[in-house]
Length: 425
Image 1 (spheres, rainbow, N blue to C red):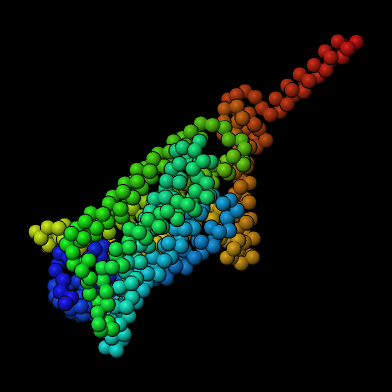
Image 2: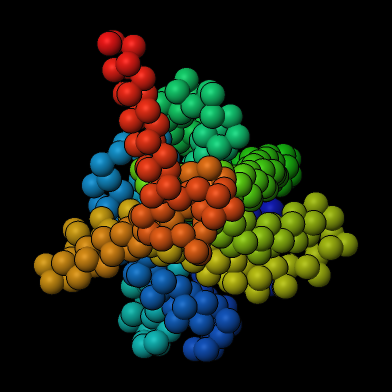
């Protein structure tokens, strides 16, 4: 009843939750507890338990902290709101990974038959309903990252349209649209499998047995919506953002910067752009293995001559699971690395009073050093003069000093005053 053809295997590129074996006649085909027993230190155990489990726990905690810190930001920007949504989606992805991958394979540490039986029941009940949710969350996460990149691309490359396109109501509306479309696209996944008569068995429905559905939806449409379109947008806009950052740095180097407030505003905008660029780079890098794994599965599904790719695909899928977990767990550290405001708010919210005091003092001293550096810049040419004093606003190249300029202005004032008195007389 539950016999499956090899060409009808579902795409497990993102999670590869079914570890498919050559014997596909069992209703629990691919369950980690069935078929050949996995070695404790096999690739699957190392990836799903030893590496992924600590990453999941760390990532859930880090995303929760990042969400709290982002909510405490004083400036409510569209980028901040999108980062909050991304933190929530990443947390849900990590929770689903914990339930689908880590807890299912952790029984290998004990290896008792009783625990294995409980895992069988748990896996069958959870997999049928949670695996489609995983596809939905992964798709929503990818398009939220794309939406974040589009928002920053408009702010950097088209600043005249920011007030019209990058507003909070529009950001909430775009997030709702992306989430709804991701749910609609993932809806067929909920009808691919069903529970069998026994309590710990599941099998494919007639929809999943349909070869046309497999080719059209799982191969073609999924490749376009999940990988080709968003990755192309991310690569193109991220490259443009990097080019704009480099051009802005070169342009600012040629201009005088005497205003500390203006310098801080530019630094804040630069840090926000760097955060978005780093998040996108990590997303692209972590999804490369998933793209290759999905390509291998698509070739093996569409062309029987490529069936030899199924074995390396399974191995690559385990590595892909770790990379997906890493992608959802590292954003907090990116924020800490590139944003001083995020670090300051994090210390203010979560650290003790003594550490807050010491960190605040170091921040103030750093800003004072920046102010001193700004005060030694020439207001005429914008270049820093090593020979000029801290109170000098004109460099030697311009042949004027603050004292000389002040005396010149005073003498001119006296002369004008004398002329005024003579004219009055």
